[in-house]
Length: 229
Length: 229
DNA sequence: AATATAACGTGTATTTTTTACACTAAGTAA
DNA sequence: TTACTTAGTGTAAAAAATACACGTTATATT
Image 1 (cartoon, rainbow over the protein chains, first blue to last red):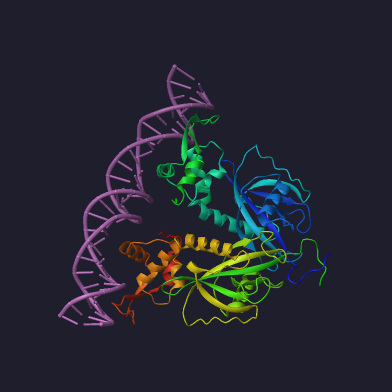
Image 2: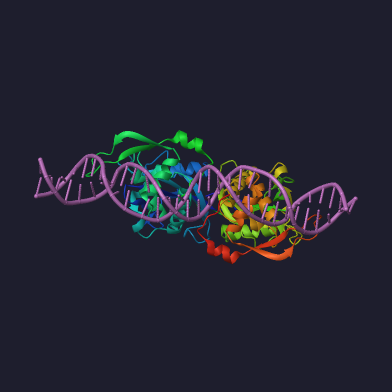
């Protein structure tokens, strides 16, 4: 218990909206809460910012504590500040999003008892979420829709080596519409940020597609040139 | 003095980045502070959020108190949350921007003694600003640069009736580059959101240009169609 | 071995959009 | 009337976007 200067009676929290792609579905990372309020509810990974850390640092720490994931570049996209958004006091929440390649290499393991577990959930089939998290998530989705039209974000969702069809799937899922295969390929290749590998896809039960990888060096040079789907 | 739940020891503030255009220069609205810290410094209009108001409501109130302006639609664009950004405690600042038509019709008159005065200042010639306000402003500028490429924001800066040359000036100022007159006109007219008036410019000392106005109805229908300069 | 299957990978013609570019017209002021 | 300054206009060439369909190839099945 401490005495306070008037005005200094807010809490600030972070909520993380992590998108993932498993090759077929767009997923989002949720935790099952182990604390009141909303104990046992599904929620976005989130918690209060500490007094001695910046909100950016806090986002990293909280993500790690609740999911075990570290070194994920997240981008801040909105601060949610309605009076009634948190039942236990005045809490402003700063939301971040990131896109992740999903795979066995990243085990989800909450380090804190604040979350019972963390799990990837299909965006198309979500449970009821705690607080205003559905709203926060919706706004995150809108954000990446706008962003992916102009930046090659799709590659953050894909494994290091991927096929052009996979890239197209990501665009189609996020934009919510079908794209023409030939035109899509023409365009995505025209940016010259994909490197064709010698290698082919393995373990598929039909004709294997050529694998590509994303050339970040070339992408960074590209700068300013905007893409548009 | 009140006792606090741990974590509830932050303050949240609002900072407003208001852009204005006087026909020639891009301006920004600053106040001269009348309170510590940074008393007598120039700063963005900003203050602490009250406990019983949402951050959006707070932005409206604070703008009004410090400048006398009301009913300005402002859009939130970023939350600044570095530990050291405020010398008197842990203050997270949520930044908003708006674009305004500048003219004699909007007197600037602080209603609170927190600001000595409010004044439009040329963006190209700014004084040293309080806190991290230069940083907040820079980020706001980047934001509107990106936005104006895709939305007809320019019209928010212009008077109700304006010439095509004025529209072009706004684009050139914000984007920081010259545009071709014929191509610019072809493009801006192609969106069919401008209505040509019978009227001509008055009081200019050379050939008077035709006046146009922005047709918000048509613009709202446009939706989805993106513009790009 | 032959066959069926399912996704891979490719090209062209048409339309639309973008770009580059320079002069005459109109109004004001001296 | 002349000088000045900004308004206003068109076209050709290049680039980008769109619409559209079939032979190829690896695997699985019989």
